[in-house]
Image (cartoon, rainbow, N blue to C red; front, side, top):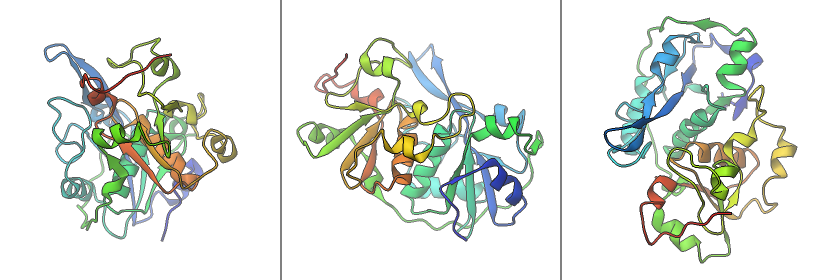
Length: 284
């Protein structure tokens, strides 16, 4: 049975015990590594253990299969087969319906949703409002991990969902490609630094990933409000980026909900871009 891309707390509460449903907490964090002088991704597993949607599992981006080489950049892409194996270890199988959530305005959940789409798995949804809304609404919560069986997950590959720095460089001279920066307005304009980044790729427009949700409930804004943020041409080539592909995934998820069908995210994102002296950076 096909699942909607975005599901409500009420829907999940009614279907939480369905045998084909797999619920995954995608919460992770960023922290400063003083010795290396860089930000690294920190596991959200302890956060999950302290309270999670009953029966859920945790997607740990510090574990093999969820990210690739982390020696220079955070949240790099793993091999598609490795990611498929990591999701199968969480119980995802070919016939599963998957619901993803986090405690970070749904941005990590959208990142995992986008990666599932990348390996050809389309029967996944993001929980509207995430952990914050679920907990406030009195959804079923547990501190005890529930045992689960691994799944059998075959995978494909949609390489066009992610692009590299060379593709973004080429887009700088292509008026038919729209660049979207998913970081905060202050970061985009170069007024503030966050996670070691400020400024933006020249020609990009700013649609912060955090702006797509209500600041109180963290539910996604109504579709008509979201549609007003984007171009009318749903077929326009678009590349979305942020620092490491998390906020960008929230924008890509929203664009997919709106019917855009030619969207990619740039990995490893601005964290890579700023290390290249030949890559231009703008502010203001």
